[in-house]
Amino acid sequence: MKVIISGYGRMGHMVEAQLVKRGIELVLASEDICSVDPEVAKECVCIDFSWPESFRKNYPFIARNFKAAVIGTTGWNDIAADVYKAFEEAGTPMIHSSNFSIGVNALYAAVRRASEILKKGNYTPSIEEIHHIHKLDAPSGTAKSLGRIVEESLGIVPEISSVREGEVPGIHTVDFLSGCDRLTFRHEAFSREGFAAGAVTAALLTQGLTGVHEFIDLI
Image (cartoon, rainbow, N blue to C red; front, side, top):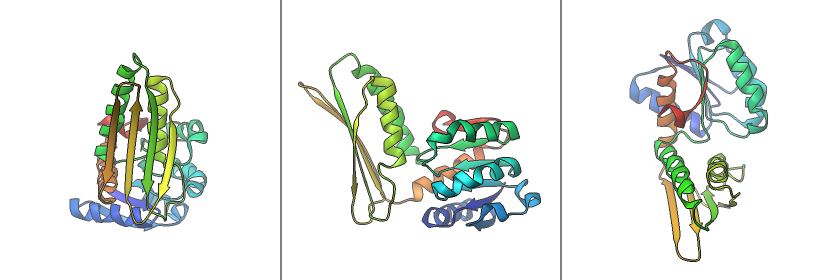
């Protein structure tokens, strides 16, 4: 497998380190993915950790030209139908997630199951996410995903609070409160390494894959 990284910020560098660790060829890392030679792109998986504005402009090129794509960029839910259509019509497999950490995806699954059970009680959900001061979006994509899971499974839209402090890689807490008790789920990332490792795992899963998938559905 060959990989091209779209977006060469902090996450791009972390993905590069994971590729090196696993002996996977990195062809190049680019801040301008649309400048990549289509003949080169068609042999590569694109791992995208760029900006929402960049992905909105670049996804048609990625869909038309790459062998497959792993999308870690968030902030495009409002155009998801268009993005899915572009990849499906091009026949390019795509895996996306608001968070590729295996631990976070376990959190998603746990919160979904708990929400289904707690629907039989009288619980009020809330979500808190804490990230480093450099993170521009709030709430985080992960918090929004957790919010959707709770809403779909419990039938209540949870309040989401965002905190920006220091260099915190990411802490997500989901709280269910009733008059009788409290149930809390918490995931704390110690570094971005888990996000990058999961993205590379997703890239490996694209081999022989068809269609558009969320990472959690494949693991």
